[in-house]
Length: 359
Image (cartoon, rainbow, N blue to C red; front, side, top):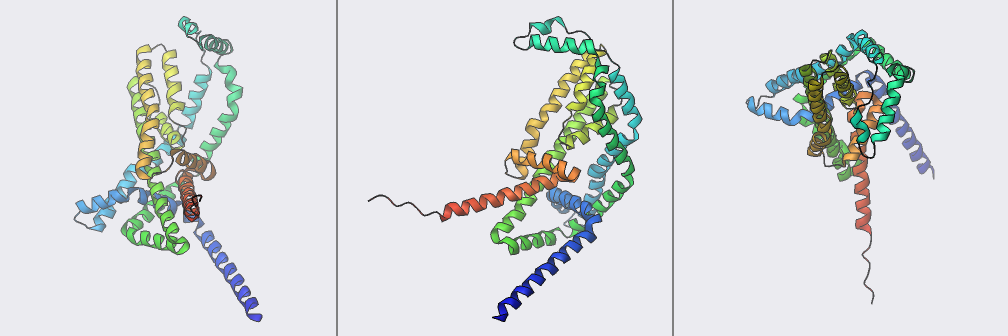
């Protein structure tokens, strides 16, 4: 009767030791975890491109790794770094721009607005109320949001040095993963199979597809929207076009869209009296805003055949929970959980006995 007790004690101590070892390992690796997760995300998203570059380089992995490392620096890391640094270095200009906007007076509503069916009367009343109050009256309501934004700018300014080191570490880890990507993929698949059999291996594969789909859908769409919006602002002559483009890129990554920049710019253009260029900016802004409705779902579906609502919930929830890194962590976690749930439900359907026909 002593053996079961001894086995239970040994199992308990073994589980405690393994749990403590895992916790200690995460504690030691905590400063490097953001860079490792970023590097894994970038490598998974760009792995097909790396294989294509390797074929063009005569199947020499070293040249392909060097080329992809340079591409990561020039295409991904540098723009994000420039966007953040541009916003942080122009905090005073942003404050002046906000003060200028708050000092504007809204013109009276046009006559044709009241003739619109259904919404004309309410729109005219709201516009007239805004005209009588002025934008300055809205300042107390906007003060809490301005405080949060100012705190974010200050935090970003204080952490630029750390962010730069994280960027460099991310590129270094990505270069290592590029050189040994097949070995890392086999290790992940072996771990998934050892943990959950076929279901675990499927979850690992789907996690990679989810990361690739989100990287294509979110990052490429954000880049396309911000580039189009920035070109539009530069064409019509809006001041601080570079700063506003960087701000649009960050807002698009955060799933807030370019409208927070483009819509006030259109209003400012109409208010300044330049109706022609304001209309041009309005048309280009509509195109930039509409890109989010067809480009992102198309790219996400190319990476992973998952419900779009699941991906978007993972992006927004991950962003709130984990910051910018959560854009990729959130969809991966939800995609894995969704796949395991579907597999479990499918096994239950297969296990149900076939109903017998009545005699």
